[in-house]
Amino acid sequence: MRACFVAAFVGIGACTSQVALVSPPDTSSPPDERIFVGTVRAIDDGGAITSKRAAKSSFLSVGVSIPEDRAPGTLRMSKNVPDPRRDFFLSDALIYSDKRQFRSDVATALRKLPKEEREIVIYVHGFNTSFPRGIFRIAQLRRDLGLPGVPVHFSWPSAANPLNYAYDRDSLLFARDGLLDLFDSLSGLGAEQVVVIAHSLGSSLTMETMMRMGPGKAARTIDGVILVSPDIDLDVFRSQAQAIGQLPETFAIVVSERDRVLQLSARLTGQTNRLGNLSDAAAVADLDVVLLDVTAFSEGAGHFIPGTSPALIALLAQSSELGDTFGQDTAGRPGLIPSTVLTVQNATQIVLQPGR
Image (cartoon, rainbow, N blue to C red):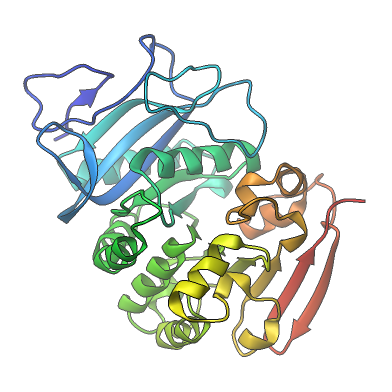
């Protein structure tokens, strides 16, 4: 049975749970994006989705409205009533009381797409991320990069506080079964491809969850993995990859030597660097992976460059490489992004450069 539909500031007596939404008074227009969500965040007595941990997964469908007058790479949200001209906001939410209905709605969304576009793209957020921000991020990536298919977000219980790194590290370990539950819930729905995009600590969660699948199963379940600025110790990553066995067919690691967040993480853990700071493919040469170096596009903290750099977004959105990653028809798109390509044993290193 489908759980209640919840609009901003409206409580419905028959509902057993509700999402606390902060939306403009007029939310009559349909959302720009419909995001399916799996989470192991706890829902409090008032219906708000929190940073606390829940023993059981919850599944949702959430509408996201995106401001029209927005530069690529920007994601603005308000803690108060948002301005639709500038802010992302959650326009509606549906909490499923039955996982079967969640599966049915995802399957219906897939069937509405042409067969060659029936893909599921799962986004796993990183450190210091609130429930709405993770949803907004995948909506922003779909809008800016033209990500295909049906969007799904896994929201693990981050404290959404830059001082609570230890809590988030423990939470990602806690959330492994929840992500595995989401993978299982999305299987057999008719998707031609399943691709995971994981950011920061979410990359570690993704690797840990693929380990729990057992040797070789990840490659049969997931068609592509993109780790963006992965906050993983290099030795740990190599150990995880060995335990996973065969990696998914497409396995890309987006790195930057100027990622300040990972530089801080390295100091906190007593290491010289993290996987996301890797500058030389020789360190992963025995693995069948693609190292995508976006250092040249780094600005500010440089911790999510594919989603925040207007220059890189423009190149990716207009090129064939992103479409090829997702198995899309890229006929008519321009050719290669300006880059230097190096092959070291099984690994390929691609150093991207701004367009000339």
